[in-house]
Length: 433
Image (cartoon, rainbow, N blue to C red; front, side):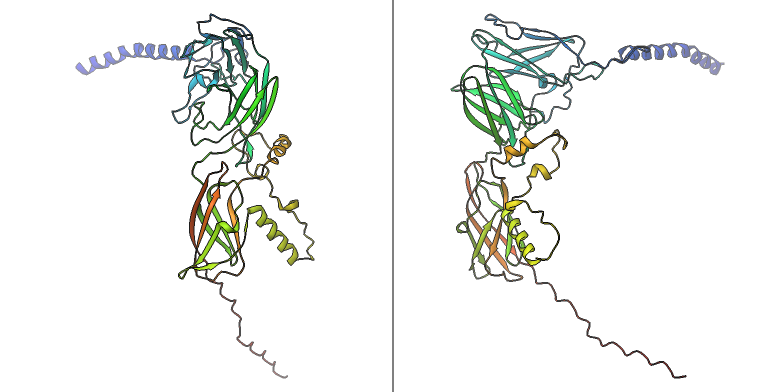
């Protein structure tokens, strides 16, 4: 009897439980931002309806937030998910740049709008740039692919000067995609900001005339500041109406280059690798080689850059095979093919089909930096022998010098090929019939 009562109780709970599950499913369906059944799919990205203050406005007493109003609800994360190592700007704030400001900028989400305000407050007599970067998304993941710049003033008239240019990673020989660009008016320490496009180009409008220092930085941690180990370059410009500059970014290391490794290429050649790129080729006077264990000096005939060594070896191969019909693919003058032409494209870099002639022309303005050098010796090195190689005064790209040494061991000579001296047995004479 008790068993029957428990069975009835369970049956009585069944419809209620099904009702709860149905209600939960209904709430989940209502929360789903997808398109309603039967209607056309929404593929249009969010559009900017209004901006306050308007671009070009002069608002001397502005105290409120700057507001960007959209035509629909936008994603609170702004399409920028995963925000890096935690030290940088995350969420919707990654899509907004306000400059020039000292300190942080408050960026808040309000469903269909973005509110922006500097933590220091709006300063009188300043021209502000509020830039919305591409990447804002709606709840259906439609992406706004074009940004917008809003320029307004809290005092002076909107200026008209412009600085443009290209940002290049000098050592890597490629464009600085998404580089942080700063135009800092002298003698101030805070400037106008923007980011370079997918080809490393940048454009800053509506700047007051005057003297500027323009920076391009590989902002690895996305904190919109130049940090100690981040590659950058700078140039001073006098801005009247229009100025253009090309920046070759590299890591500025106050410690000079140090020897990392030495590799024996053959009996007269050793390749050296340094901890950073060299700003000038090595000279034989900077290199001292001693044969161990008695420290006998060894004469260094030449210290070559990798392109020079490639040119020398290519010429030697060509001289050794004068009748070869194989075409010589070495570039004229022994210059190496630029790394931008032969290295795989970096993430976010323009595809190979894009015209890169502009980049190649800019890269040709400066020599390719190398972190290697090749030593050629007047006489062959002894096999199975240790040599200590010392380099003094190696110079990096920003002029810092460093010393260092490595020890290399020459390999044993290859064993001579064994000749088969076993006499060939005579062929048997067939029997006579």
